[in-house]
Image (cartoon, rainbow, N blue to C red; front, side, top):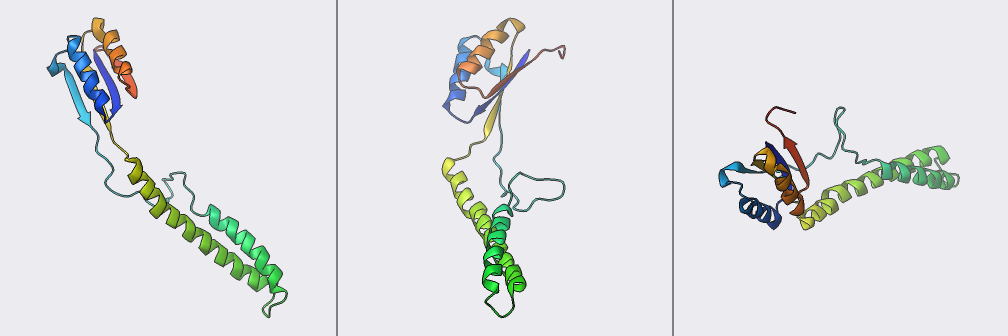
Length: 156
């Protein structure tokens, strides 16, 4: 039987491996695969087929609405009139909001990710007998595994 588990890269995975060795699991039956961190930056603009749920235009639309109302109100006193000044103000508000969101996404969130220290996960695969499976699973959960799954050799 194979037991798959995922861990954050920390000392808990070392503790889990030493506990498994104490329970009689051989070193040859333990396989560890570290996952690679993302090397390229995330894309700012979504494509037609892929969206990440982050909207860049929501603040721009809100500021465009607010600026257009103010611009149209002030436009009654200006020479071009309320319609032109409302459109100019809406465009200005949208550009300002889009610039703020891009700045927040590129600078502030990138710095937060670096400060948080996003670590990749580690996959731990243990090959054991069906009689030892419950003890191995409990050991992995005790050592803060993120997820555990058992696969029997017959595929069930």
